[in-house]
Amino acid sequence: AGLLVFMGAIGKSAQFPLHIWLPDAMEGPTPVSALIHAATMVAAGVYMTFRIFPFLTPDALTIIAVIGAITAFCAAIMAVTRNDIKAVLAYSTISQLGYMIMALGVGAHLYAFFHLVTHAMFKACLFLCSGSVIHAMHHSLHHLQDHDTDPQDMRNMGGLKNKMPITHIAMLISTLAIAGVPFFSGFLSKDGILAGTLSYYHTHHGWTVILPFAGFGAAMITAFYMFRLIFMTFYGNPNNVDINKHVHESPLLMTIPLVLLSFLSTAFAFTLNFNPLLSKGWFKTLVGKSKHNFLDMSVIKDGIHHAHDQAMFLSLFVAGLGIATSIVFYYFKKVDVDKIAKIVNIFGIYNLSKNKFYVDRIYNALLYRPFMYLTKVFTWIDWDVYDRIFINGWSWITLTISKITGYIDYNWLDQKIIDGSGHLTNFVSKKLKSTQSGVIQNYLLSGTIGLIIVFIIFQNL
Image 1 (cartoon, rainbow, N blue to C red):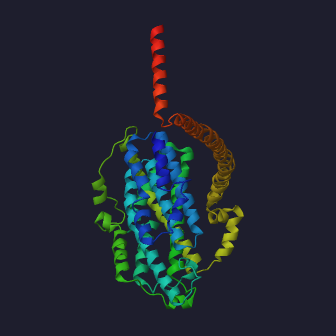
Image 2: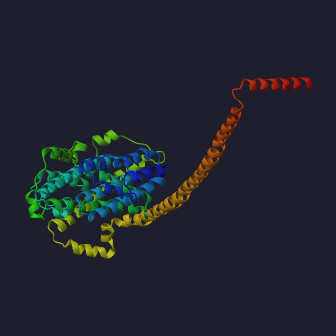
């Protein structure tokens, strides 16, 4: 029953394999994406799973953890090859939601909820920053009367740091948060999740090693593709000098929310202290303790506590590795990215990422095309069988019956019976009328004869 309820969360929170709707939904305005796709709507599935967590069996939690791990890792890989700035954030959202689901599966449910809140802050900031950039690009392209260049394509950007300083700083802060860098909120919540995966592996061993592998791997890839976004958008030489000339910072109405959300993306907003390694703060105190019907939460809590230091150092290492790789590739540009892509594609990884693990094509082949074929079959049945034979057949029968009954009604009922009765009545009336001659002697004779007949009848009786 728990897994059946969780199936709703798979669709609602864009978990693999029902994640494909979220990138398409990101086509909407960035304030909408910041609100419902980062903080509220997509978080509903995670929050529901968090609420039913005490009633989920260990086996159900294991399946939930695996689905979350697959989602977090695969979505991070998909984000690497996106060039649309909002598409990168869309797949990043899917990946972070996978983190939360994985955390619930391994028992680190408080950190899942913590990450839900921190993610709402830095991802909303990222979306609004991307909207600020797109707004500036669109304004510049409109000034140039260029209607062909995509204002969301990062390959058309570059060198916007000095043009949009507030947007740049806000986006850099929220990027550091999602990458899990100390002093930022993502470091606090993500480390707890990664510690939960390590603790789960230390308890169960065997194949469960895929959970920390997916968690730390996704953390490294997240740091890589997010700083790829930063460097392609704000650093280096402008990819189009004419566009860059007319780009300017967004108005205060757009930048004030960026400043507020960037502050809420720091660790200080959640701990109210200046120790970046201390995860205790007002938020954890507010959430309080929790119970579970099947698990000993004290054991899980101790396991996460013991794995925390190891998880922290590993997360710092993988985040640093991802950031360093991104710096080499996209800031200093010491490496030809296209050549690296060809080398990586020897194993098919680049094509997997570029084609989104072919999930869309699989759905197209297994669901969309058969469904369209069925619709054509049902359309043929509806138009050629049901309409032509049943509907048109009944209409032909009805018309035929109406013609027959019309013929009978007019030629027999009306002409023979109705009109015949009229003619007969008219004929009889004429005959009876002839007896009314107006001669009184005839009336007297008729009356006498009638009296005689009546007398005879009574005599016989």
